[in-house]
Amino acid sequence: MNDREELPMAVDAETLLTLADEYHDRAGRAWGTREVGGHLVKVYSLETPGRTVTERDAAEALRIAAGHLQLGRARGSLGLAVVILHAGGDGDYVLVHTWIEGYMSDLAVFTGPAARPDLLRPGRAGLAPCVWEAAVLAHERDAFARHVLGGGGALPDRLAAWGADALSGSVR
Figure 1: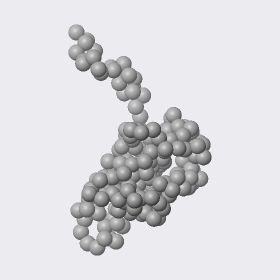
Figure 2 (figure 1 turned 180 degrees about the vertical axis):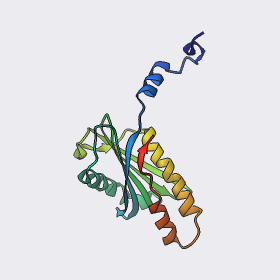
Figure 3 (figure 1 turned 60 degrees about the horizontal axis):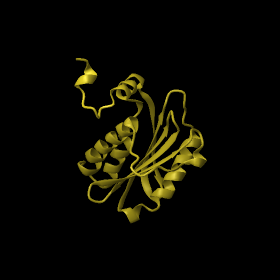
Figure 4 (figure 1 turned 90 degrees about the vertical axis):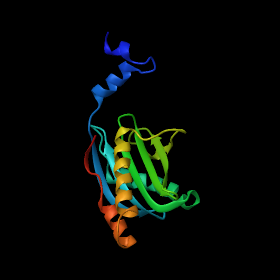
């Protein structure tokens, strides 16, 4: 009996194995912490091989994020956010992740064709982070819990520690 015969019918073995064969690290970069749309925002970029995120791209992503973040208080925002600009293989993505009341978070995903920031629009309902974006958000969850929620000292010191705790280099 081969591996596929032992799998439940719902498992798409061929597609999963193709994804595994094509899986690779992506370049990640932390762009620092800035005030955007009334929030303290930690900014990241991710690049698929052959794509590069420029200062202009980052500025455009922050412009999009600012529009979303300006309405944050209406969604219960606590004033802290993470923005990820992902220059992907199939297009560009801007994720705006905001910490809100009750230990919850809010996520907006904007999508569009590669290198056309003017065409980025809100993603379809249910769209969630890809594996590389989720790695950044997992780091950010841990940094938020470690420094802001579980950290000691005055809040400005906690926020400075959170801002300094950035993921950088290859993202797997």
